[in-house]
Image (cartoon, rainbow, N blue to C red):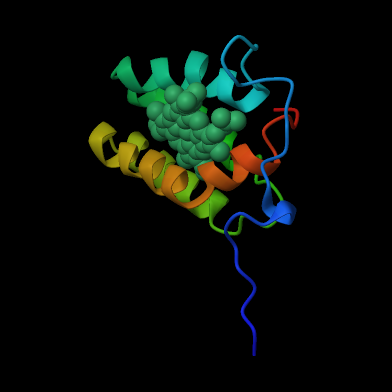
Length: 110
Ligand code: HEC
């Protein structure tokens, strides 16, 4: 069986978006992450962080099956006052989905 190469194929070439690159406005979710979730995290306010992560949990993109679970893990940690613990959900989701999201979905409404 021939395994199709996933590198440098025209089919997997990055989609072009009118947002997110240098000199462009932020993409919808990217802007929200920066203006809401980032500050909620650095505020050290567990309530704020839990609320923001709960919002993320309500917006799973198609095909990203762990999205809700990861977000809700973060909500639970934040609610327990464990901000550092909640931050592991940031990394988990970013490691798992950020690249794909940025390649395929980043102009979606948020
Ligand atoms: C369930 C998934 C998920 C969770 C949880 C999550 N993120 Fe994100 N985050 C993303 C995705 C997807 C992007 C990429 C959006 C884009 O660039 O279009 C992103 C982008 C970002 C960005 C913008 C980075 C840039 O280069 O512009 C910041 C800042 C960010 N996240 C912070 C956080 C923080 C802080 C947390 C945890 C408190 C967190 N995120 C939790 C999915 C998630």
